[in-house]
Structures are given as structure tokens and as C-alpha cells.
Image (tube, rainbow, N blue to C red; front, side):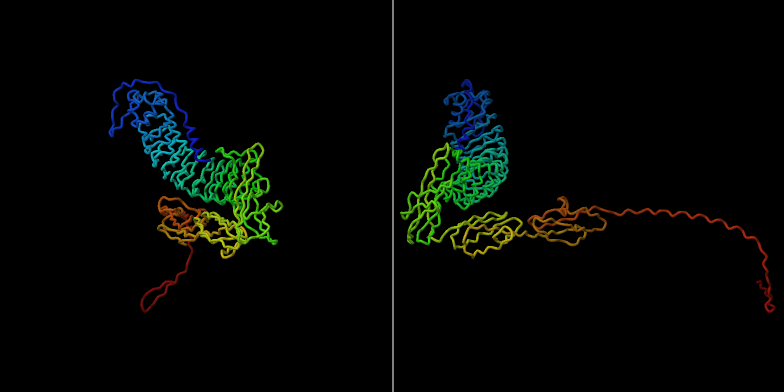
Length: 596
């Protein structure tokens, strides 16, 4: 996309200037002066010079409103204020924006190339939608956080390093930060309406993972940054233009998912034939720049049919394959000849060298190699090539470069690392017979790294002491960390008091605690408040304690059911009298009588 184009777009948005406002008499009393010597601007009373203490700014305002920069003594009318919605001061000597706050209807303002450093007077311009501060002395943008209606903001070439205040500008759809000392773009993750342009070229940015949520962004410029890992960009499926030139990017396979890309600049990157096949999946490409890369074989791009019709990129640059600088293996054949792979054009045409070292190398079309008849063990083999190809209805496109030979037997191979959800690991280029350098272990929240394996699942653990004989991809293997889930009965009792749960695993069936006089209400993340957890709650990446929640449960006295009254028995009928015999005995010694 390019920095120049970004600024051109910004200028285009703000180029419209209002018609000249009618003049008013300059013979008016002086405006009251506030503390600090700054004039208070009173429309229909104050002059332009009084409203804008910066002489250069006052002249620019007079030129736009009165048609003459010398009319700063004329009155700033209410109509001037009301009708001014675009300002584009062009004098680079402007150093203060004091007074611009009077233009409350202002929608677009450009201060590009001025000496302005303090933008706090702009905080009241609530209607401002476009603001260009490119190449100014601005370093602090905290005042801009109040301009919540901003849709386009250009800070290219400023001293801004902290973009945190911009997180509140949720209506932004274009943002220019090129050639600033910005390194952390995490605040931009909240700018989900950033759908048009994001220019980070020439910044200190190395981590683009915060941008992964900007799925609708169309133009992204990362040229000249410190970016090497583009895997987070795989989610930016709305991208139409991507500039990665002058970066350390070598693996472009994540870009295969960006099927809406029309223009891709990979010039002066570390891209080589090893991963170029992923670019072949971008069948909608109109423009592609591979100049200054290690690409030698363009045949894998033969399916990019749109490039046969249109080669013009969004900057007006012709698609370029000029000046590639790959390395290629040198092979000593059994007959004593020496060969190196030849360059191949999009349609499969092999390209002959324009010069070789040592001299005498020629193209073998059948084998697709540049051949020297005899081998000189002391020689360094290389060749140059240059050829123009004309596609239908297009200007000729140059395919050229310098190919450096790698010593015989020292072929190189790409070793890729798939971190399987962990932090990214840079690829390596390893010579035949050499060993892969063990990279720093990747990290992944909630998981312990188990090592590098030869397959995503299964396979065997890779032996870094083993010599490389071909290209390979190594896959990170992870084991979920196990954390402790503790149960606090909160006055009751529970068994077990804890259990182990793997990261990402469900808590499972939770124990039921008991407490005399209380009813268990469930497990919560805090003794009071908090949120309820269940068997399906998933374990995070740390130990967890949950607390029992109780409700008082006093037992009511059950009333006694009265017993059924006993039915009185029927009185017994009197018995009919009967005759009974009775005998009397007499004891003559005592004189007593006994009856029987």
C-alpha cells in the first residue's frame, strides 16, 4: 500500500475547502483577554488575529474565510464559524491550534507538516470526523480520546509511541501510524470498525496478534516493521492489500486463507520456494511483488490467472519479480559436470542465465538446470538472469536476479515448526547433513510443552541430534496442566475436600456437603456473591477454591394427631339371683364361727 499512498488518501479526504466567507469590518473593540495572554474569541466582535494567537494560523484562516491571508484584522463572523466544516492550513510554520475550538461544526482538519505539538485545544470539536496530524511534533494523543466521532486519523511521522488513548475511538475506520515509534498495538484490538486502512509501516511493531480480531480490515501495511510471524493475520479474511516488504517474514503459509487478497508485497523478505506454494492458493491476486526474495521457481504460481490480465498494484507499481536473490544447491554429477536449478517463469518456461561464474554455464531445458561441463572444487558457482515476459494487454514484466550456489553436497532445507496453539517459533534453513537448532520452547496457557514430534498426532519425538536429509515440519506436543479444585464447606463438612482437574476439563460431579440446620444451595466462587459453578464448569489455568452456600433450615414441630376416642362399652346386664349353699363351722375352743 505504501506510506505515500496512505497520506495521499488522507489529504484527499480533507482537500475540500469552504467558499470564501463575506468580509466584516475590522474596526471593532479589542476582545477580552484571558489569563495567560490568550484572547477570548467572540464571533461578530473579535478579529481573526484575536481569535487565533498563532500568526501563521490566523493568516491561513483569513486566506480561507476572507480570501486573503493579510485580512487577519477582519472580524470573525458567526456565519464564518457556522459554515466552517473543513480546514486545511498549509503553512508549515503553524505551531499552535489555540482558537480552533471555536469551529464547533468542523468535520475535517489537516495540520500535516506543521510544527504543532499540543492538540488539547481540539478536545471540544465533537463533530470532527477526519484529522490529519502527519509529520507534526505531536507525541501525546490523550486529548484525542474525546473525539469519539473520528473516522479517519493520520499520525504518520509523528512522535507518538503510546496509542492507548485511541482505544476509545471506536468509530475509526482508517488509521495511519507509519514511521512512528509505536511498538505495542494491543490497544487497537478494540477498534473493531477499523475496516479500511491500517498503516503501521516503519514502526517498531513485532507482534501482530492483537490485530487478529480486525476481520474486516481491507488494507494493512506492515512494511519495514519487525514482524516475522504472520500466523495471526490468517484471521483477517477481509484483507485486499497486504504489504510485508522489508520484514523478516519467511513462512507465508498462513496467508493461504486470505482468499480476498488482491495485492501482496513480499519484496525483500526471506520468502523462498519452500513456502511459496501457499501463495498459489490466492487465486484472486492482481499484483504480487517478490523482488529481492529467495524465490527461484515461479512455476507454482501458474494458477494465478488474474495476474495475466492486471499487473497494476494499488500504488500504481507494476507487479515485480525483479532482483530476486535465491540460493540454490550445487550438484556434482557422475560425469564430472556441475548443475544448479534454473529459474522458472509462471507458465513453466525455464530462463537461461545471462552470465555465469565460472563462465561457461548453459541452460539445460530438459532438466531445468544450469550446467557447467567440468567441476572446479575451488570455484564459487553462481549466475545472473534477466528476461522480460509480456502477458496479454500488459506491459512487459521483468524476471531477474542473482542465484548463489551452495557448495556441493550442502543442499539446504526448510524446517518448519507448528506450535499447535502455542507461541510462534521461527522456521530454520538447514544444510544437508547438519542438525536443527533446538528452538526455545513455545508457551501455551494451561499446557505443559512435551517436545517436538514428527507428526501432529502419533509420530515420534524428534531427535535434534539427527542430521537433516530433507525438509520437514515439527509439531509441538502438549499436555494439559492439572490444577486443584478445593471445596470449602463454609461451616459445614464435605468429602473429598479437593480434586484434580485438567486444564479445559469439566469439574465433573461435585460433592454434596452437609451442615446441621442448613440446606445446601450450591457451590460458588466466593463465600458471598461470586458465581455458581456446576459439574460442567471448565477448569482454567490456575487452582480454584469454591465455597458452599447455605440457607437456614430450622425443623418445624409436627402437631400430634389426637387419638380416636374409645367407644364406651355396653353396660353388663344384671345377673339373675341364684341360691347358694352356705355352711357354718364352730370352734369350740375359741368360740369363733366360720362360714363357707
